[in-house]
Image (cartoon, rainbow over all chains, first blue to last red; front, top):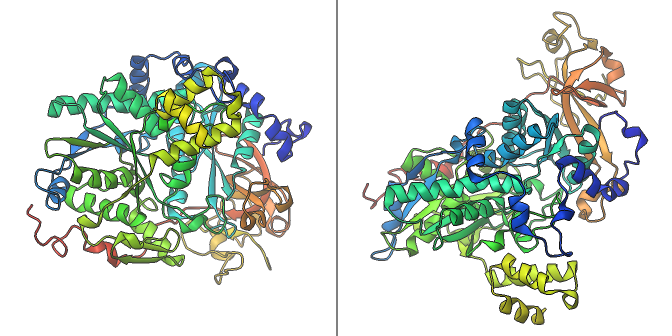
Length: 474
Length: 146
């Protein structure tokens, strides 16, 4: 940590965590108390409006720093292949929004752009984000363009100092864009390090979960709606978003609603990493996906407010119609197909939703369209071959076969043909009940007011009557 | 340099030495040649301004959060950061010193144990995976009209 006046403060884990709220307030110039209504409820829409940016402002700010207006491509050859194994009349067109075209190579630039603009406007000297994902590179790239200093706090290596290639590459990208990267060993205390860095520097907290970040993703939804309408004369029938922390899905779905796409199915998709512990030193390098997996997707869906800000602007169950799970092997297979059939080499983590789209398209009519709303850049480390090679070197079995044989951390089975790409729907009812259990932990149901019931109903995209019935089952 | 934990990267040659997984190292003469301020000389000091990586123990195992799984709790939370060394330091000193000071790329001063001189990235596309080679090609495309 920096020397500064840190010596005068109690920097023990407990003391820093106890100062969490004041550190957050100072590092965002925003007081969440303005929106909070109870331990559960808060005025979500007012919080989103309070950013002070209109949708047009956001489009303009993003355009200034090489973000947005990415192409929407029809994947004709992949669609043909899917149709060849679909029932008669089935096999929707698969479209992909090539988000790798954003500065820094992923949709995360949309989130970072608004935070960097806000930080600059409010007079902060720098910007900090805690992330092991593409978001770090996005924040660094946006900070570079706005003349802000940048620190990325990243979980990189296990206790042997081994980091899997994708994470190492993401750290390299942050440094390439001029950020200082605080590289950490495995553990949730990353948050503690973030708090200390915020306190030491007085920089802006570019958390993934602020209203700025989520509002920034809305342009992805409005753009793709306009593109699908222009090219195909219809609303997108389904949009698939890779789901981890929830911001991708939330922002895109909000954008779709802004564009009046009320009938578009919003489908979440994660890589199933059931059985691996996300904070385990041993398991850390046994997963071939560092994000977009159930280790984030499920806990963040079932309780969004577990993040580095008092209330999370990313609330996936509010917008999610379905949730598809795919295996690591299925994603690697589809990533290779995208390269070979469509001439698009993109990073595997960006192709999680493409994998679910293959499954969905098979069950949808031919005249319908399913939109995969992102891709990400690829390169050394961030490549399916790097991931598989690293997995094999770390004792994970890699083979071809039926993806049913996938065991996270032990076996990666790459399908032998497209009809073996099946995915698996997640039980939405179970997720909603799990959310309710978490809400009941935050405030016992007996103490819920009408405001809480109304909030929870909106947060679960269910009628209030459903919530009142469901809490009786807890 | 016996038992040293510092990694030295020449920047041009893959001459390096690493903790317990020691690769035979012909350092210091060759590596030192490419380190700032040590051109052509046997390197006995790491010069001010050299790009290095330092390490800090943020939390000892006993200080770790209660929620951390058991295997993780047995290890300290460690941080590594790269920056420019703010003063010359003798190698012999660097290998035992608990703290050297760096100035990071954004100008922050941090202190910690010196672990790498001239750190660089070597991640790659990995070894060939035969399982991927034939996907989407004529070897697997029979029956698909394109």
